[in-house]
Image 1: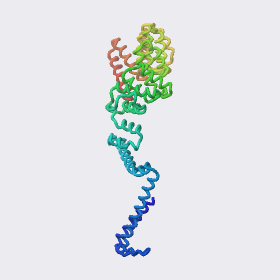
Image 2 (image 1 turned 60 degrees about the vertical axis):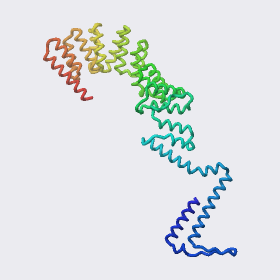
Image 3 (image 1 turned 180 degrees about the vertical axis):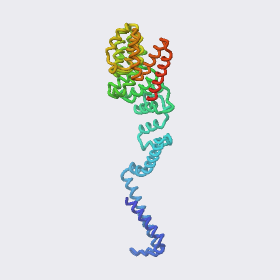
Image 4 (image 1 turned 90 degrees about the vertical axis):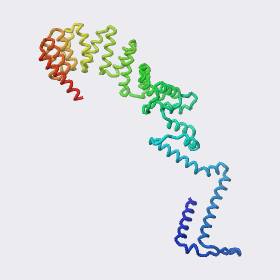
Length: 386
């Protein structure tokens, strides 16, 4: 601080001497111990400042020598270190803003600014995912994790090969088996390669460890259960029960579960669970498949049970099924009455379509054409609303 003050003072005096040259040219006479020294005021002031600067420099050097060679070297290299820090910061800012890469030469010069491990991480960050090295068991664990995270990032383009990403994730999980991010990305890889068993295991593990809530993981886990159930008939019932507990209203789950029961010869259980589902949820896919089953197993008996239910308390698809069962039981009058009521009240496309088929079978083509037209209009209206 004193040096800065001295420099500012010298600058101010120099400016004053330039502005007022007459003062600088005035003679100055000094007498001491019989000696006489004559000069001009301007030259004397400049010489005085130079002497003071030399004294400060000498004091700094002597202080460094007395403190030891290390302190002297630190004093001399401080300016170089600050310049390197500034260059490194500017390079990082350019890289973060996407205006350039981290060049290896700059990182090499920054060895004394940052520790080696930090510079290695910066080098990984500045290297494209496709150019990252293969996993190395001898490498620093932090470096292994950083490379794996870079290679498996969903934001990189082009993405490295699936096999390469999986190898990096395995290396990452070996050094950090509890890494939530590593397990999440391994689940992405398992889904991408169609390894449904591994995907189910990973998602269930994340859920049990509290890394993701049931609400957040539900849709993906149900999808994995359904895919695995398709591939493994032995596990299918247990997997579909798990899926049902996650989402009782999911029509795809109920459809798959009923089909598995039907395949195992348990059609009674299929009828029970599908009828119960249709009581609360509108699902024409299940209703259509259930109709085909019930038409072979005393449709009149099932119709009588359904006829006791109030229309307002059951879904549209169950009302449609009830009318179809009446038609299959040769109760044409009741079937037409119930189906027409459903079609007109709810503008329900499947009801209009069923009536069109019935009219067509009866040879009433004009009425059939009208019902088909109404069905198409209803579907178009529904799509417009969506």
